[in-house]
Length: 129
Image (cartoon, rainbow, N blue to C red; front, side, top):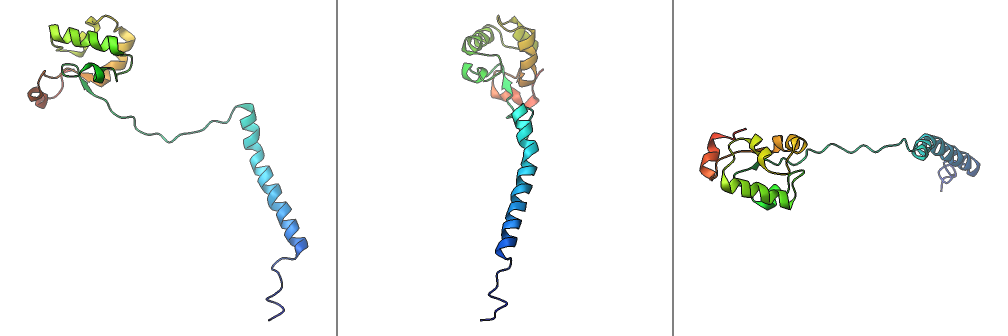
């Protein structure tokens, strides 16, 4: 065996020095992160995922589908269905006729609902806002 190739790449003394240098580098590079985390200033950033788009036809949706809308619970969904059974919605603003839907709830619902026909045939013309 060749004496040069059997020699270690670094001598034990140099291995220890390199090990301490790597350890010091890791400790110093992690210090700012630990300091910010201890002060509560470190926040995580999540990758933005598009929210699922929910678009509900007020004249066809059942209580279960209406309950998926923000600010609409089971009782309010039933009131929307009861209002629709007496008179179909022609405009989204008619949701304000339902007890429990105020201006703030209406602002949340406006981009998520539309007034289509009561049957699937009328949906070809597009939604009525």
